[in-house]
Length: 92
Ligand SMILES: [Zn+2]
Image (cartoon, rainbow, N blue to C red; front, side, top):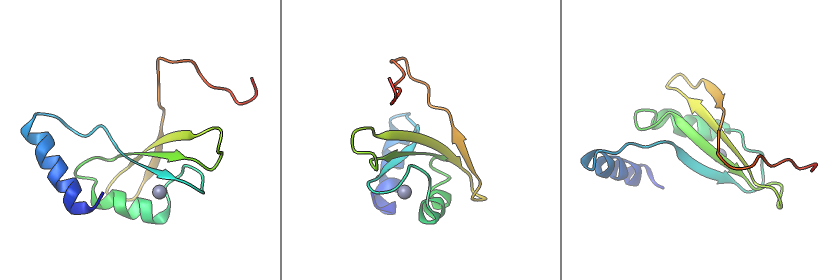
C-alpha cells in the first residue's frame, strides 16, 4: 500500500468511526522482524498506527506472525499476540 492509499484508508476509517488495529506486511525470505526500512516506514505512519504485524514465510510450512510497536522515536517493542485457537508447536 502506498502512503497516499494509507492516508485515504485512514480517512475512510475515521468517517466510519473505525480505527486501524495494525498495519501488516510479509517477509518472504527473511524472519519476521522489522528491517531498517520497516522501522523508517513505521515512523512515517506512526500517527495512523504504531502497531506493525509481520508475517514471515521463510519457513515454508510454518508461517510465523509477530507484532511490534514502533513509535515515532524508532523504538521497537515486540507485542504478544493472543489467540483463542490452539497453540502451534513445531515439535509436536
Ligand atoms: Zn518488512
